[in-house]
Length: 562
Ligand SMILES: O=P(O)(O)OC[C@H]1O[C@@H](O)[C@H](O)[C@@H](O)[C@@H]1O
Image 1 (tube, rainbow, N blue to C red):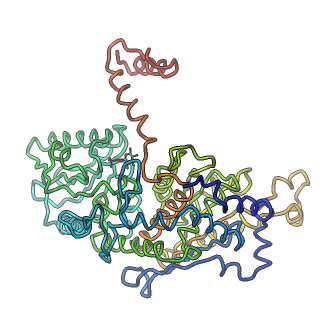
Image 2 (image 1 turned 120 degrees about the vertical axis):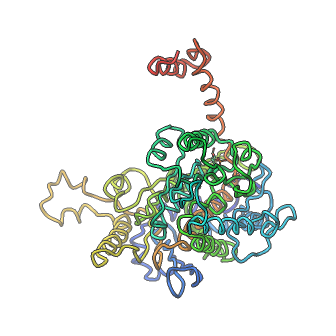
Image 3 (image 1 turned 30 degrees about the vertical axis):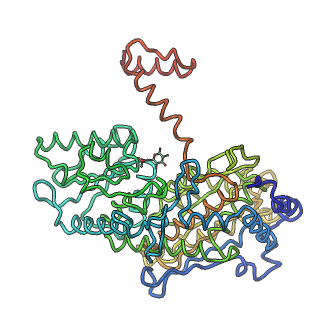
């Protein structure tokens, strides 16, 4: 396609930013238009049979505290249309190979296609084919039921209650985030560990309090060749065999979640205990696949299925809602607006929800591995900014640390705030949840209205020299997401998919391939080479630049390597 910044709507947006965007005062917009909240907010309703609410949970997306007018949204949608967003979306759902640098379809939506719509890649029905989506789901159901009920036992006949997931990147972040988010639904007799880091501390700490008789290892790796995962898995296998004096039965204690049967078998896992998926599932989208087995084990298959169903509901919304009411599209276009026209560099996501404490970390991979790209579809560098730096922490904690910069720093930090109306833990007569909600509301309002010098003075007793320090410029944009019930599996599924398609929308407009990740390769290759050098006697890194060589030599000296 033509470079995004040469599309007619881009120039229109630039002109609109000069005239309207730069001068836009959010609090004035609310005064001028009493309907602004209604006009700029949209509610998505989940099906009742999967929701935490009897009539179906509503999720309200309030975009009204963003620096936009109706004309801004119209122009952004025009840009999306000119960039071919709908065509690209439909191509993804049609199983076309839109991941063109790896010649792969991007079809993780099939994994949560709970209405069993026809979905095909290369003419093959991925849902109902042997070993396809429905078969793997059934395998996951049977296995998770057996482990949870105690029918599947370890080599001494004991129930497996200690689950260790070994995986990294998408094979870790999704399972960790989702099991934490759904802890309320988790089996009370189960302990979960997630080992990802090559730092031996990670596996050592997980094994330290584990009993081999009751431990189940899930070796989670799409490729089954990732250095961290294969090394940690081998260490786990060695530990298991040593601890059981060679009597331990690998087939009862190790299962593989992977696309690579050959490597799984080489490792020593019975293919019958392999839960497969296809290469059209990107690592960062794999929690919906067999990689989500830890979730199914922990919260039970029925809840895992509701998680998929909530995700599917958001897929349906993204596929069918008009762009102007399409929440992931609006979220993505707002990100484009701030990134490309306001020169914002970041995207803050702050869940007002302790269970969602790993949500920002999960979104970092989703967003930054997808859209941290410079090269556009024709192989030339983008002449505009792409992926923002996504960061976040749960609130209210974040308010007591980096929110200083969000309120009074020199940078524009567009922020998303997420809250559930109902807490799973309404302790102290729901006081905590009301305080949480008051902060959720107050932060967005404070960021918008700010505080003028006159308002500071009116508070009295403020020395004039302090006044500028107490001024808040305000006019800082937020999107508020309010889940109408509690965050259960379906609500969580829908929230994740909101961000997936928001990321898709950004990538479609920026004309980049959001589905590869070549940028992670260079460091991996170099690390392999350096690992050999660490063992080579007399090699003091002479082949490297002076800094790398100097550090390598110093490491060898301090670590007593020759
Ligand atoms: O699941 P695998 O094959 O072990 O890969 C883990 C991760 O490996 C990283 O190198 C990739 O950048 C991620 O996208 C991926 O999720």
